[in-house]
Amino acid sequence: MNPRAVLSYKVVEDMTAMLGEVVQSGSGRNARIDRPVGGKTGTSQDSRDAVFAGFSSDMTAAVWVGNDDGTPMKDVTGGGLPARVWADFMIEAHAGAPVRPLLADAGLYRAAASDDNEHEDLKKQKKKKSFLSRLFGN
Image (cartoon, rainbow, N blue to C red; front, side, top):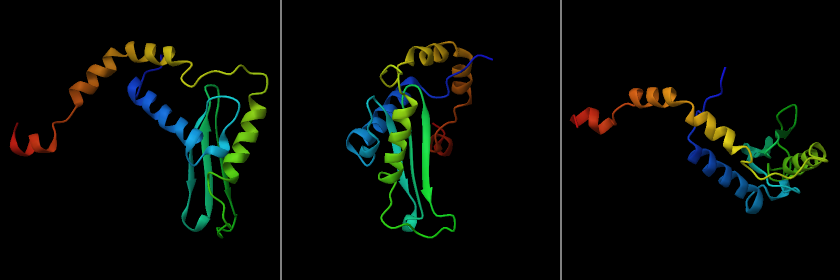
């Protein structure tokens, strides 16, 4: 089966830039490593769970930290311990691998998107009218 795009390239590009900024200058700064990466931090209410999920051009991984019994942790957030554990893992996992920019394989994505004209046509056909158009008949 041929892969097909489920998001426009512009959406992928924008999301990659936003998630890259999380690591470069946001709450995920502890996840910075020797190559471009992006990610998302998360902390549940009362610090019961903390997570960092991130990616490079070659790998995606997530780290969850929490207590088995659901009790809160003290001062643990997704951008802290989980991001540091993630960074340590990713450094080892990429040992010896070349540094590649995020979206290094964008050409493959674009090819899948352009080969999927039938999918785009179906999306256009199934696109519903806006609520106001349906309500007022425009």
